[in-house]
Length: 114
Image (tube, rainbow, N blue to C red):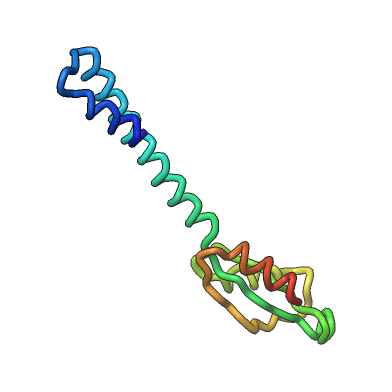
């Protein structure tokens, strides 16, 4: 869109009314596209940011198991408490809470590593 607008601006010296209308339409389209891009970035940041955690419950599952997960809540401990609600007799032990702007990628990397 920016290239199209630049082309049209170069033609302005002999522009007709129709050309000026076309230019204004292109400018409006560019503004719309910029707004959509901004919203997409914001949504992407919201979707990707979060807290990655590593927890274990040796009493229930043994020493060799841990859970690596992700929480997007204001308090990630809410997620840990939810996991230990009724089906697990003992509380989970939290080893790490790590905030990340790309929590899904960090969680995946930890899963691959461990």
